[in-house]
Length: 348
Image (cartoon, rainbow, N blue to C red):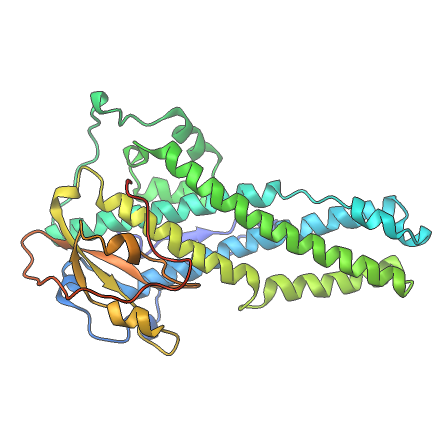
């Protein structure tokens, strides 16, 4: 399964058909800042593809989230105009402003499931490349409970067109079998957390500007102008909060998808160990560099502590080391991930 020529269409901007292509990938991100290891070469790991996936996903999701934030603010501005808050100089009504984060939650659930599927597909593709064979997912074991759930089928009907296109290109429908509901619940929790943060930030910004508007007797047009600039500052800066958080959560969900893929019963027996991958540049953390290229058995407890992401905006990932590969288990790494990061559930 190769997705290097996949084109993702932005379905969130009306009247536009912007496309984010994963090709061509520029040569300056085609390496990790060091020589590729034999195991990275064996499974066809492409650092450039991974970074391009992250940037394209963050860009596409940011567009959708940003549009929803702007819509949310426009609706709140309508509340301000209709209740006469500025005209009546009524500070008490500032607390009555209500935002609706549901569209943001929906976008984030869809996008996070997309990232999960990307990770799971890459896990399968790496194992297939290393084995030089295609693993057949066409046959389903009825007795194993691996039939596609109705919710999984419904999900494929409601996700954005770009994700439907990806499913059509190369994700077999059986790949959504087993545990779909559990994964969806996990991503829903993340989506609700992120949407709550965006809602809180937006509401605080709006309340502060409304207070200032009353203090300085702004007109509605003056308020709208300042609000537009403040909103753009929040959502458009590359290092802004939206992009910052989305990069971290892409790593979380993508790498979780890879883990679920590696532990799928169709490929589990082929995977004997994992190698840690850190991208080496001026942004790399010293602790992450310290575990780069290290290999530990798939059952080693270190993976309960060091499965990416292991810090904010962590770009690290994991690749499989297949049975029969000539490798040595690395020395135990005693450092810990960044605070509040690292670790995973005991069960997939």
